[in-house]
Image (cartoon, rainbow, N blue to C red; front, side, top):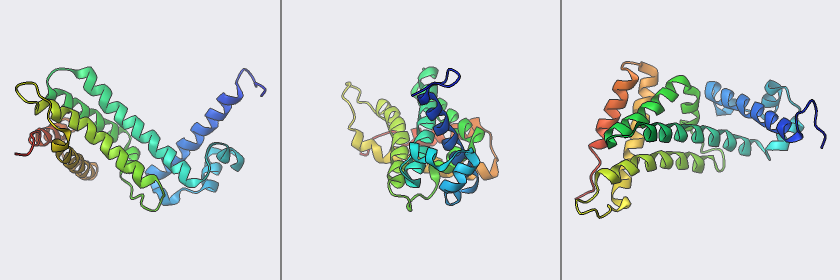
Length: 205
């Protein structure tokens, strides 16, 4: 395939895909998933419909791709912040939660996409649950480290996973309320979430 002005066909296709995803992400985040249509997306991206189908089989596949992008962004933000902070487990968990909250504050559209009711879209509810479980895995890794046996024996993940999932659900609810109320600072909310999370970081007895 020919290059145009030094831009390869693959580069042009990737640019069109990015434009389509950006439009859908904005529409979903601001107006809701119900406002997304293939015709509307192509209009706003200023692309012919054939370019939509060049990248996505249908609307459902398109929505899954948007959700995947948001998930990867948020999880990467938490992991990077935690690893760069170092220090105690509490400090690392606080850093991960702070980074997540700052990302939500800067991009509330992303949080809406993560928490939308997606039961009407095949495959998307599974993706949403995967996202929540990925965040729970980050929390779980800290929990396992905290609850490690004194003799060095590892704690069974299954004992702590329910607590990690409970934390993720609770943090989501706190964030939903905070987005509306903005009654505390990001640092204070992260500290509260960290304290509540750490209080659950022990296996059931």
